[in-house]
Amino acid sequence: MNVLDKTLYHQIHPFKITTDVIAAFVAVYLFWLHSIVIGLVVAFLPSLTISLFMLRLMDFENQKRSRLGKYVKRYIGRGADTARSLGFLVMLAGGWFHLIWLIALGFLAIVMAWTNGLVYKREMPVQPSPRRQGR
Image (cartoon, rainbow, N blue to C red; front, side, top):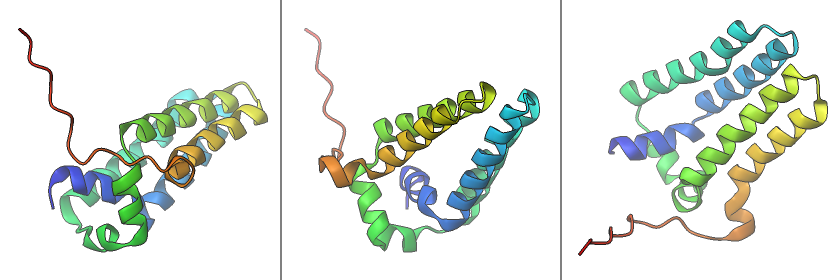
């Protein structure tokens, strides 16, 4: 399995999902308390550390063969990753400004990014489109 596949499939491993969910909600709470430095550390360090550990030491063949693995291969790409990241930033802003509706909106953006393939049924291209040759 190449690095890009490992990067994709590690996102759906239960250990990674659990780490991300717990870190996100603790980070939002810390932002609510205006502990920005500790909040940023909690928001990003556990996820980054777990990802590096998992990518280096784990095999993701079970995730690749699963229904969820087939789903993420088909529907989750850079756009979904960007939407999830922006949703998380919106959640953090909601925590900072004590706006529950903004936290909920960010969470909704993350859920929509994960489930976009269920709604739109657009597949990710298997290979990148060829670059146009300049004349």
